Length: 321
Ligand code: FAD
Image 1: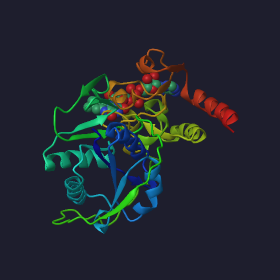
Image 2: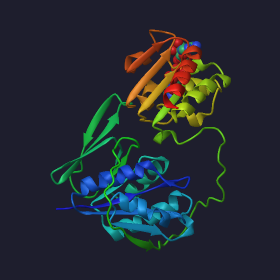
Image 3: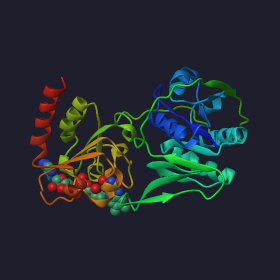
């Protein structure tokens, strides 16, 4: 029998986040002919109706309340709980984004159901669904399923194909009952450091302590610009104040799965690998041939990054323009 799936979609900087397309695609697969419902927050939600239709949502709920225009845990938990009670889904999916990581456990606790977080694979298995998620800092994968009741999971961005399947989408304006808000966001001041969204970047050029200074990140930024990618860093580089902690990849930083991760002057400590070892292709540039990063790299370049990186930039410039 088809399932009723509920997807929490997200927008960022005036665009639907890529993980929302991924979640809608997974939703269609697990719905197995059932119904895909989706919710969007914020004043410009209606502008995304066509995009949501392209990815096969049967119903789009738009939350009609300016108290959810900016994310707060309180307002979202109340709103999404009410939507869950209205839709009565069999499956809830959302991105393992900053919002997903904050909201999903709260929602699970509030509605008293389980949660499987940070999934990298979702496979329908008869009437059930099998979720894979990395454990032990990415060294192993765990397969989990719910024995009964509502299925609730967050999906790691960049791990699922986003496939279009246009359908007719009914748009429903949803008026939540929001009360007793403990947090009100008055203004968001953006940090100037850091470029795009690392969790959804397809190409990342990352620098470690071997980059030696803030200035040393310039050639990395140039390579990232030519490749259309983003710059990230190891904790070594952040601790040395070469760059902002918002760029840190690893166990205590961001977890990324780009198509290409270029590690420059990064030794490959286990805590760093925890954040990037699931990248599709890893290139390591290090002057120490014994550096542990080479053990997980698909391609290794033993050499001085200040010579190798500009050469790569020059070459890619020639081939890509
Ligand atoms: P180093 O280990 O100092 O390596 C620098 C590398 O640069 C060396 O391999 C060297 O050969 C190479 N090099 C130097 N000059 C050049 C050059 N000119 N050209 C090419 N190569 C060069 N780390 C993280 O990254 N992320 C985390 O989230 C994280 N969380 C942690 C959590 C805990 C609880 C702990 C204890 C540690 C954590 N760490 C984390 C720190 C981690 O253990 C390492 O200390 C850190 O990753 C090292 O950073 P690095 O590789 O840049 O520096």
